[in-house]
Length: 373
Image (cartoon, rainbow, N blue to C red; front, side, top):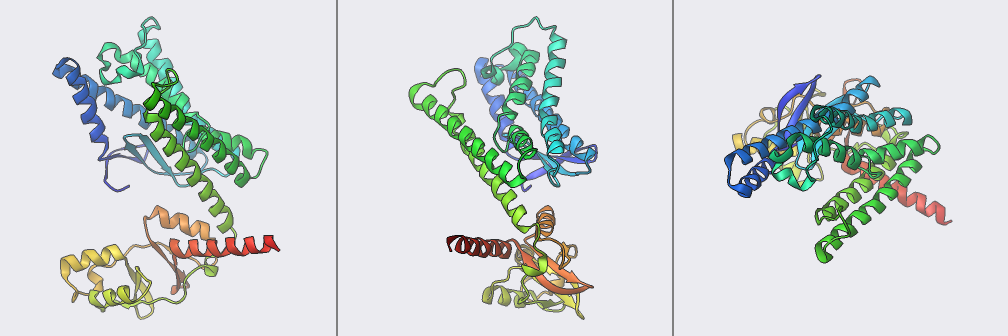
């Protein structure tokens, strides 16, 4: 993820922190200081945030390590202001496996809540969640409360929370995967509307009870978008799973020789549709010049420099007969905008997310036409 840095590696999984995380740290430290104007409060506030995000990392590791048991790797875990994101290579296709992976994160929070509760002996009154900005009053009590809240919130039956995946897995035990996802997404969007309504009432009318908070409006929008995205991705995966790359790939494209200049690449870019250019030498693919690499090369070396100084030497390739879904997954994993289709060492096509979307649009239009007959 852009604007994030790796700060650790746990069980072979890179732990990254996004730059916006430091804004939360600064905000909590400032808020804690302004309460009593004590630097010790600011330090304790920031320490609490660090512990909180360590808990989030453990939550995400619960997902990642459970997925590993089913042969699914995790690319990385990134800490954001809204929590953590574990990027699994894929979700399990077996509903029972997905259920276990989804429940693993909240299960970690439940275990941590029990652990911290045991430390304080169960005799201390828990601080309200609103006191997180000044957690020194009841540090361990807040950790118990935070883990309980994280577990319950993540079990809300709405994507992208774990509860949405739990619901989908339970439905998929009786329905096909696409239908189960569609139902789970609709339920999630209903939950999003309820979140938004509660937040709206909190902002304009003083709320509907202890769960009211204007921030619920933003959570509602986040949940709505997450549900729509999950449903769209599953529908695309279902539609593309049986289509080979050679039915979708672009076969009318331009290539550059390894001795061509960056200026020639600019000419191709401005006069055609392509943004990524294969670099060939005697028919062999030697590299890929992306639009971003071209811009960087022009800025550093100028238009007369060879494409060789800017091209990428490592790039994803696909076989003409593999599924489009598999190729797209690899393209996203590499953060690439294009994928070269190679058969027997010879370039035969280019696959981009744009031409895949165009293929889907055509298929949808044809299907709608057939249904209307």
